[in-house]
Image (cartoon, rainbow, N blue to C red; front, top):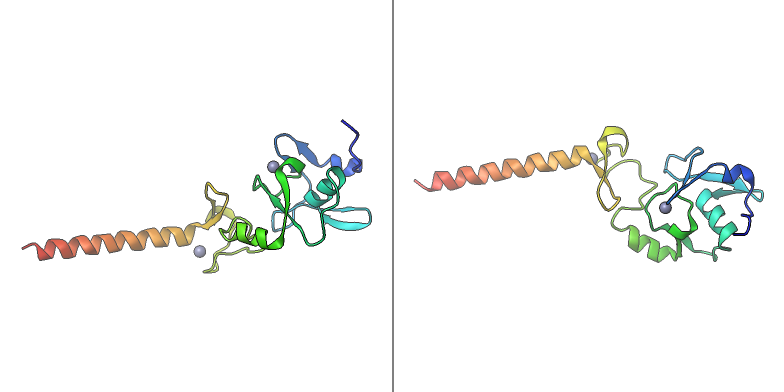
Length: 148
Ligand SMILES: [Zn+2]
Ligand SMILES: [Zn+2]
């Protein structure tokens, strides 16, 4: 394998396994940032550019592994913004959002990640579960009232 044309200080931050996890500081969005060639970069974009090639203008990098701190070029795919938005309509990429639509924080014990990598709000989910349980109980009540 040809030597990676990335500076040591960037390589030193990658924990190379299946995913190449960035071990340095992460932005609040969960993405890694670094400086390279006199510019600020999302770390995975810098690694992709160095190892694979320039990312075409306007293309975004999608994490196939859904691991935002991963910089493994095999897990990265350049996609158009429309495609990225389409893929993230499910919520997997709502990186900039730090709270659920009701304003509960996507952090700490309130944050749940579902099997698809989507972020879920525990407060809303348990409120929802309580409500539907209450509705079911009411319906049972109505049914039993109607039966005599
Ligand atoms: Zn990965
Ligand atoms: Zn919520």
